[in-house]
Amino acid sequence: MGFSHITDFMILMPLGPQLMNTFNILPSQFALLVSTYTFSAGTSGFVGAFFIDRFDRKKAILTMATEFAMGAFACGFAQTYYSLLFTRSITGLLGGVAGALILSVVGDAIPNERRGNAIGMVMATFFVASVIGVPAGLFLADLSGWYMPFMVLGALVFLTLIYIPNMTGHIISNEQKPSPMQIIRNITSNKNQILALLFGSVIMFSYFSIVPFISPYLTTNVGFSYSQIKYIYLVGGTLTVCFSLFIVRMADKYGRSRVFTFTVLTASVPIFFLTQIRETPNGLVLVVTTLFFVFGKGRMVPSTAMVTSFIKPLNRGSFIGLNASFR
Image (cartoon, rainbow, N blue to C red):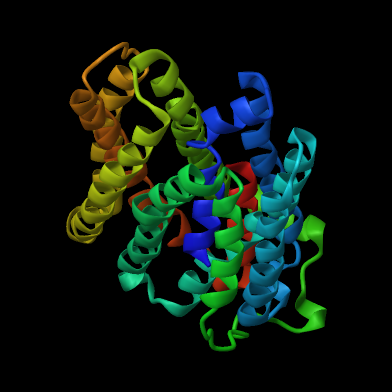
């Protein structure tokens, strides 16, 4: 589910040149097409935070996965820019809750001393979406059209729904269930939780201020062709997966905060060059984009482990849902 969710979110961005040409839209309209997913995911994450801890994790994930697959199919059948804008917003509503559910399962099932490694493995599956999902989606788009990746993703969700044990240990009695206002007060009254929300927001803002327009920028200003874009995600994603496993080990050995600080400082170098680059040999561009993916995404492994480590199971789903909404 995590693989399909992240691939669905990411695949639209490298498809930017084709979508702008197919629907004859401006870059600002493409930006809205990307953003509508996150607007919807933020809304559903906020609303879902008040209810996510009241249900069996297994039933919630299966429900979200089924509806998410239907949303992906709807995107593939979109015939106009506005219909695609609408279907992307619906898919975002479901994806926002699904991401929080996946991390909540990890937080509930894995002890704190092994949680960093477990989250690293989950994040690695997200990175695999860059290695396999995005290049494969771009290959399908080259063969059949921009809509094909969404059709395949919808089918993939149905085929890869795996067994998840019933998880109800976090559920409390009706008398003890907090109201939405109590949930908000529980979070806003805790300084660490407020800082964690701001922390996640800054990380995502810095990364996705750049990512959506990498593909249009490289094809318009640097000299890449549409078909060459897949190699950026293939090379960058492959090394990101390998390096994320190394980051997990270093975080467990030297501490999550130290490793996070190192990845943040290192990521600033490729960010500078990527945002300044002009016509450049493809090999050098691949080096810059790969370093950007490796260290940009590498920050998320220790930071996610840091955030989830101090949240109690009772309101872990609620907090992660609000955290996803803020991001």
